[in-house]
Image (cartoon, rainbow, N blue to C red; front, side, top):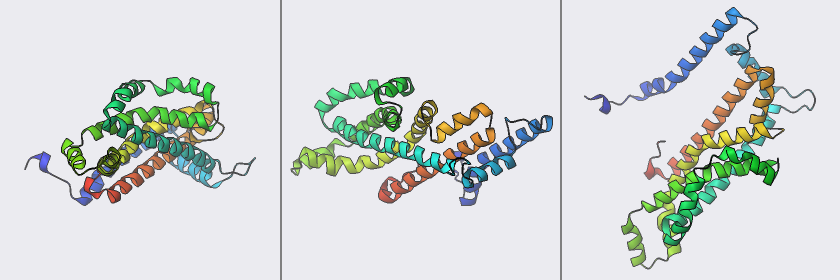
Length: 270
């Protein structure tokens, strides 16, 4: 049997999926042990036990001045900004992608404009956004929207264009209006793609959020990482990085589950 046709069983699949993570942890532990054996005061690669103790402290102990558990406060602030920006971007992308994909006049008007926007580096616009929208929440949300909307819109518009033309013709033959075709023919077919787009855009959304919080914020996961970097508090930084990764994984898992349950025929496997 050719290797391309061989599939691992369930237990082997779990082992193979966990293997890269285990190797990374082992490599880090070995590197940390080597550095600490040379210099016990080394801060670059703290011991895994130190990271664990720091994580327990950050998750359970309140700030001495305010009494707030800063990690949870930062998490709430960042998730509010992230989900707000991604939600707005998804709504705009879905609407604009449907227009561009279905209506030739809209395609001629917006397709080129969206294509050009997708090539603009979003982080280069960050100073402009701070000037226009101020240093508050709005500028951070707008950066996420600007950063991921054009790419999502182009993909959704192409997905609409890929709908077999025979379906559009049959719907028109049965007397469906343009609005009915959009809602009953195109929309059900691109909603699974929208969820996939959101999943693929989450990494970029986190990047834009962390960058915005690092530049101008007084609360948030990105703000806290860049605040403690001056003290070389790698145990805190690594705890926050691991926590951000876990949050991203949970959001992705939730979206994947939503897609699988809502659109089982798509067999979402990303």
